Picture 1 (spheres, one colour):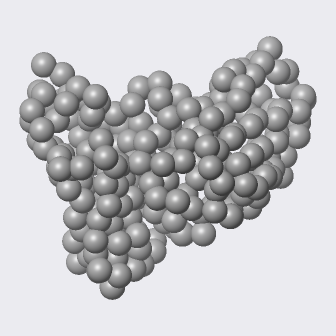
Picture 2 (cartoon, chains in turn brown, purple):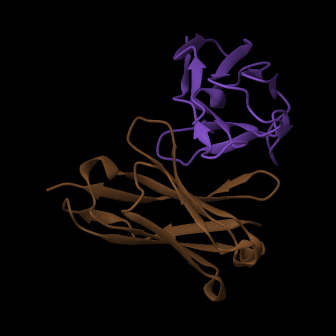
Length: 117
Length: 108
C-alpha cells in the first residue's frame, strides 16, 4: 500500500525556517513525481510545488507565492522528500501534505506549520 | 492558473436524498485530469473520484463524477450520515494543479 508520512512541522517565529520531510513506501519512489500541497485553516488545499524524478531531470516547480523561499529536494536512497521553508510568514501557517499520483492521488496525514510571534 | 469555483457553498440535505455538487473551471480542463475529495474535520482530504469518473479504492458506488470542459459534477445518489462533510474539486491537467474552495454538505 502507498504510504506517505510527513514530519518536521512546528511553531516558528516569522522569519524562521523549517525543513519538512515525507517518507514514502509502497511504490517506486525513485520514479515518482512528488508534490507538496498545503491547507490553511478553513481554506481549500493549495499547490506548493513539485519535483520530478531524477530520470526526468529532477527539476522542480513552485507556486508564485512561495518561489524563492521554498525548496523541494529528495533523497531516493531514503525514499524521502523534503521541503525547506525559509523566511516564514504568518500566511504560511497551514497543514503541509506530500502527495503523489499512482492511479489516483495519495496523501499523507500532513504536518502542521504554525508561524506566530 | 485555472480557477475552480464550487457551488453551492453550503448544501443542506437530509439522509437518503440525492446531492449534486458543481465545480466550474475558469478555462477548459485537460481531460481527464479532474478529481473530487471529501474532507472531515481534522483529517486529510480523502480521494473519492479521479480521472473525472473513476472511483478511488474503497469508495461506495453511490458516489459518481461526470463532466468535461469547464463543468464538472459530483453526485451522491443517496446520502448516508457519514457523507456530511466538505467536498473539494481539483484539476491536475494544467500546472499548477488547483483546487476549489469547497462545498459544505450539512444535515438539514
